[in-house]
Length: 214
Image 1 (tube, rainbow, N blue to C red):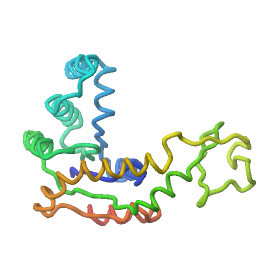
Image 2 (cartoon, rainbow, N blue to C red):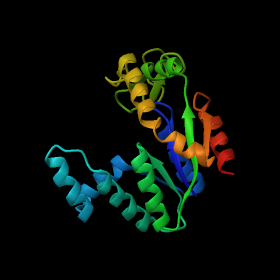
Image 3 (tube, one colour):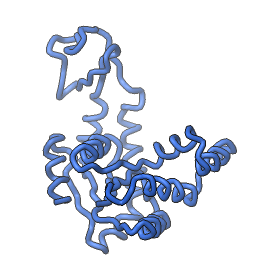
Image 4 (cartoon, rainbow, N blue to C red):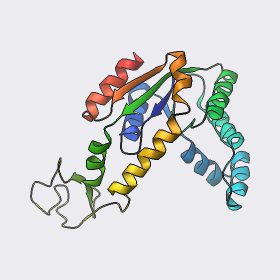
């Protein structure tokens, strides 16, 4: 089974992709991760991509297509793919169809994690972690049992990501809508788009995704 998982940063896409890998034996294909991996490994497409990036240019759709094609070949036919961050344009959607067809595959589902923007801002801007062990907390939803002391390791220093602020989150939402707008109608015409409330508890989101895939 091959799916596209959509959702803005903070919607829980990474967590759900991880669970799909564990529960269904699927493989998350993030173009950014694949690109970095190919460059590190010095594969033919990685060498080509590095030369482009070293010139300060954006990696072309053609190179991304080569990456995906190579990854699908390495995965084998019995492993489902979760496409994350690709496609983002109508041209990329068409290219993905061609790549999948060459492998005797096709998209089964496009699942969008739908979020409330104001609630997402609260979810992201309230996050903080233990500076020592990385345990996660939240201003509203998960404070340490003893104020100022990490439940896991007892440390007393905490940190927040500098980009976890309202302006950045809202900018990401605008970018996400701009990137998904061109491709959703393509898949809606095929009747393969499902929407899941990404603001639910993690286990509920997982259950709803499982129901779509059943």
